[in-house]
Length: 446
Image: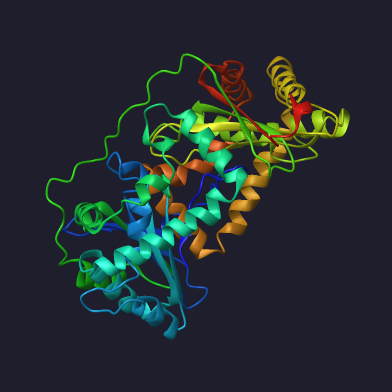
């Protein structure tokens, strides 16, 4: 039922989806709740999505996993609803619901007939302030999240490798701590810490409500004022100010060995800039760079050089997601062909990157990528859930409505010179972590 946002290995281009400005409106309630309304009247359906501007990177030191743990617990009892009654009510009314946690946000959503919007607001407002936790709830759900970690992370060598690389990338910033938490700290999750986190961050002035679908702003405002307007804000809640990542002065390398590894590969990640409010140009260039280098297995720079021309790789790619409150990462990956070692595969990556910087951007390929992105935006406008998610994730990552709506133009206007400037960062390994993923018995992969 619950969805955890993990640091997936194969990240792809971040969606640039936005809707025309005239279809999006916003207003604020007196208690600080920001509301975004996205109109789409083609079907009598609405997505009600409540985003909290708090995630795993906002947890206190030593209490990793509490944000995701609390996400689970919000499906338990409130002062008005029995445990499980929230989701059963949504289902009984023909809808569906879920939730997810990231480093920068926690979100809860329902998809349902638009004439049930008021009911969704009533229930979501109730659990913003009125959850009822017992020691039994805490103990049982702690077992659930520990089992989730066992299944998704501990039993998956690829996930463990990704977790180790993430921890190596960030020396000081909490992005180095897994969203689900470290097992030894998850085992200590308790009611006191969880309720303290809930009372501080689950408040209207720490939340953004996104309503997308067959609605009009005036009706949404009336309903939001009725159901959310009386909720008290957290007094003295400040804007997020996390510890800073110090300068990276030396490249880092890890070798992850596990007997369960069937296919070895190399991944290198670089610490790079995220999309910032009013300053998205570098992120746009990095987005295009990822597409040019590894966005397509047959037409990308990596694909043509490593998979088609030389047959040195079975797979190659590049990935970047600029939606992040603080500095994020740009990554490249290569799965070597049989007979080639991981050391040779890493040299192959370096060679192609150097040649790209030396030879420049293929202007025709850049033009095609820009057209493909624009086409995907047009198709994506048919998905109200995707639109709600695009706005919510961007706003809780520190961007504004104007930033969201200008993003497609930023991508369309990226120049070859800006892309090459971004690519030059890949020549400096001092901000990088290179990871080798291999079977512990494979002695010939070095």
